[in-house]
Image 1: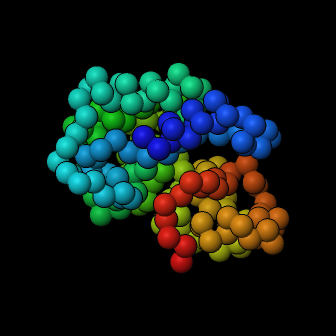
Image 2: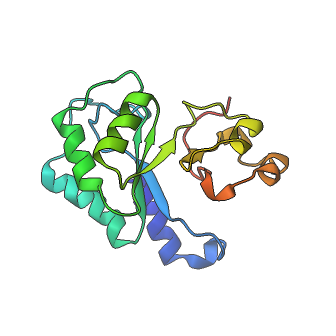
Length: 173
């Protein structure tokens, strides 16, 4: 797991990283979840056992790191039992769900009200005006094209509601 390797590297080699940077959350989705809209897996039918799911999320909890599930498959409008297991095992204070589409957003808000909702970069208008005029308290993932654009970064209002992906795999476009 790349996220865990990065976290361990920061802990084991603090002199290699900026001291004023803190990683508070990791993001991803356990293998085989049909709500995952991002990475493809070699075997999409592979799933984790209940114990493996518990261990998966415990690794982050033990490090004091929150976890954001990437439920960005806006084509899927069904919650299967495996997705429900993932939600139940990840459901704790400080965790959240990156969503794309009203179906999953409504489902999470109704059934898991303590989860933080994060609007996916794939689902929203990512113009600076739209970001600055946003009225909800949901977090918002910033388009990766803006990561090193200091003019854009400095013009953002409500920075506490913005997520910048530091080890993103998305292709800028």
